[in-house]
Length: 62
Picture (cartoon, rainbow, N blue to C red):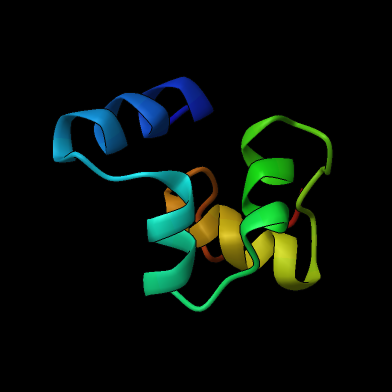
């Protein structure tokens, strides 16, 4: 899934990035950074966010 697809899915579901972040106990700003490509999301919290969004698989190493 791409960031654009995630945003489209949120729109279809009537969800905002902020509401998704709250529901999943993530920092809103970090979620935006992952979606906007401002972080590589290779490890740590950014990686957890990318996995939860469906941008990366949980066993990704790159």
